[in-house]
Image 1 (cartoon, rainbow, N blue to C red):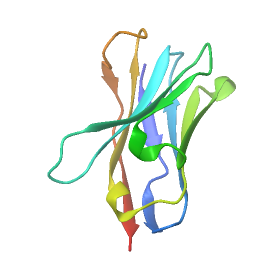
Image 2: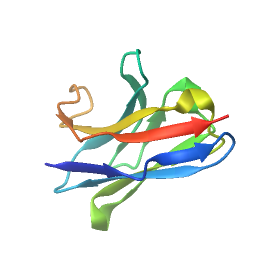
Image 3: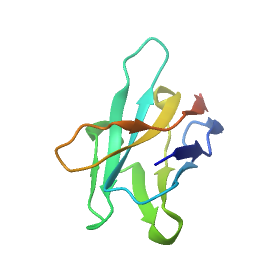
Image 4: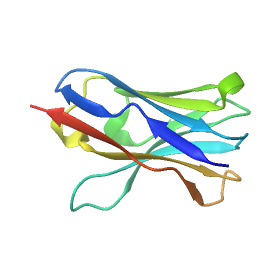
Length: 115
């Protein structure tokens, strides 16, 4: 399954941005990760397609929301109340099962939050 992330850009602190990740086929779980300059990649959140269940990292709870469009095989990351520390390259990824590691990655999309 190929993944295509899009929607990144420049946004002011407190603003909103929506990222999209289009998959070429069905997946079990799709997640979002991010990597800031000089930092390790970190988990942002994920959605499990068949249940619609979502799970988020603590630092985005209440600000970011993940949703999916089954017909389009597309997952969205709605980012609200963004902060300068949200600046990073955001990646989407998939894994074949709930306890499997993420093994399929899309290219990243840059998000820059200005203060």
